[in-house]
Image 1: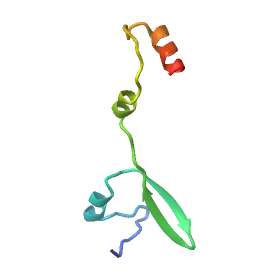
Image 2: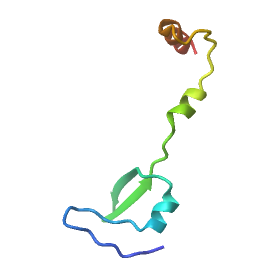
Image 3: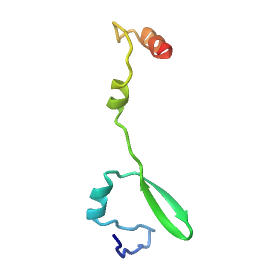
Image 4: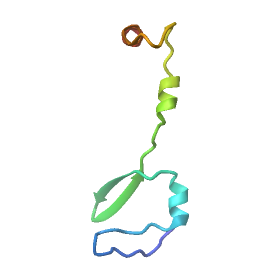
Length: 74
């Protein structure tokens, strides 16, 4: 899909909504390759998904010392 877009005075390019919806991200890696600007969407992870992926056996989460110890031991 090719589209013509314009760079404004502040250096911004407006990406059409139809393309933004396809990307499913609002964070991108910008690269210049052979005189072309390339944008690659960055996949983001929610903090909840990271926390839920850790399995530890701690009875009392209010004891931060024991929680840290369990996390270090894996």
